[in-house]
Length: 311
Image (cartoon, rainbow, N blue to C red):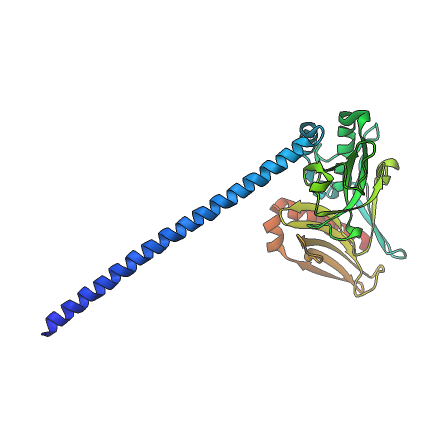
């Protein structure tokens, strides 16, 4: 066999191998596409079943459409409240607490006023929803407030979340009977549907509503939630600095906490470090969650609070 014939045979062999691998690749690609299509179809069927079950259970709850009409357009956010010009911040160094003043507003009848008519934090949204749905349920049902821990964002008892409990005579939350309305997460259904909630203290009213308290006080290191977006909760907190809390040692921080996490990360913080100011910022992370104007307004508000305290 001469050199030309040998090269020709080698080329033919390589072409056969190339054709084989091309055919094998096409076959494997078709099999993979088929498997992905099957998994996608199965996933959609499961989601459809879960959605149908959720809708069916929701429709079995009393006045489901009327309640949904009240809560579906509510927004969980404290950004608008916090950036109002009349809101101020004070610190109680002796009791290790901090207070936001003029954060709550009430109308002439004593009802809570939501920012833009639909925006507030969980307590404000619960109070607003109570007033709206009470006439719908009439005298056949009793409606009250419940503090709850929620596995996604409000993991501990001290991070309590406010929801509404609707019951008929004889129903008991302890026995798992009745219905829950959570306007913050736009959820309404039987108690059994809220498996990721731990229900705690029940009350007929909320203290800040009963007393028409415009201020909110918190212990240091405990944040006020101010924004829920996707898997993240944004909060405002006042903290000690190196174990000290006095006019020369404190911090004001915007903290980001991921769903199911106990600890958060600073988006922006100012520390009074033995009388000297120290700033921390993660602007890229902040801007991935907030619009530029929102982040700027929130950051400027923290700076404003800090400057007022330092005067």
